[in-house]
Figure: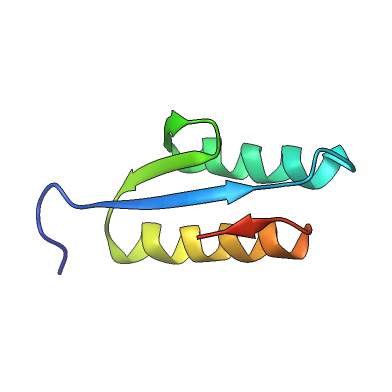
Length: 69
């Protein structure tokens, strides 16, 4: 179980072109309800579901030729 007030962060960079993967990633993050800290850094309250979702988004970023941590 996560500690109250714990957040999961995702730092990512996606190439500008082609734009379709970048837009799809951003839309998925928005559906999850992320808080954008700065460009390329987002946060969600930590729980098992959000950790899993962020891992999947990170995989999408890498598949699109970007980097994620």
